[in-house]
Image 1 (cartoon, helix red, strand yellow):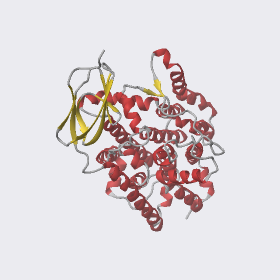
Image 2 (cartoon, one colour):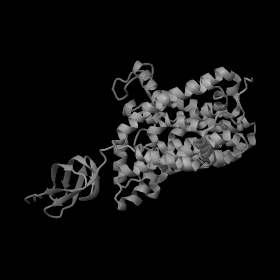
Image 3 (cartoon, one colour):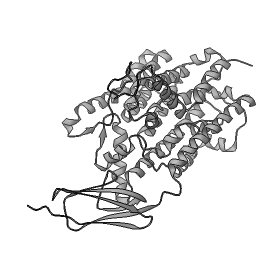
Image 4 (tube, helix red, strand yellow):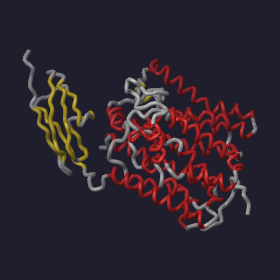
Length: 449
């Protein structure tokens, strides 16, 4: 028995399921089935900044400063599907579910190329983590970004294994940056790649691959010259202060208990399994195993995002902003997969891993089932009947709507109508019923000259 962990091409000869063999050969099938699961369990509530993003979509805003390509993707799909009766929530659901399926595909490709064990283990780890919440129609940008992080991890390891060029690894990083500027924290990982491979000449190709990052910077800074408006969603710098904030804008200082509690909460939400498995594997197979070049790359990536989780402030509270701290889990999962061939060799360790996976999945599933609101998804229609035509602004629960809404979720709504013509405002409350059109009559009062 050897203490050396398996190489990148090692194959696990333990028990394989027939389903695992199918998914290993055709990962697209697993991704398609995952999408169906995600869509069935899509969230029916706005999380984090979801409500504000919904208004950005309805207001035809195409660019957000920290998530350039992510928001542009949402807006493009929104413009495409709105004529078919889709609303902003459904569009965000769709994009997150598709991105989740793409993440599953990338994880399975990584498993096949760098792990060699039954892919059901990789899927189990994915589905037992916060990735499941993000993939089930999460109403933020982060699922798209997570998918690009898996792609970046895949191409970084491919480069180290002579299966991809440094340019391709750089392009994967650049795609992640266009999706979310948070990947800037992982800059040390991408710059470390040629050093790990001991091929300094590859920095030229890496620079070519990273050139879209410069394009993103120039686009942000000079978009006004193109007549493009870029909206701000959150501050570019939002660090936790070293000491308590006397203004109360920040919830805590760096060394307060509240900060530690939030760090632990975010860690459990993204996965409380990955790091223990990594540390246990290093203990079992020797400290030298973590020095393998692909593992060093993934470890540095994970630690860079750990730094983000330690120093960034959750403006909405960690219960709503935990997804911002989920980035670390992507390289962590890939790092776990590199150890799986050795870790799963004994029945005891397989059970030791399967039990917490099952427990974690049940905990996560309870949350996505609650947010899916099964049995409470019925749709109706609503129509504002104005006694005379006016220039108006109509908001349902704060979201801008047209007077005729062919598809809207059943439930109670606060409706505000701003009469720009007569400078009046109207407030109404209405209940939308499944399968019916709710009429909201408004008698317009003309202002006396």
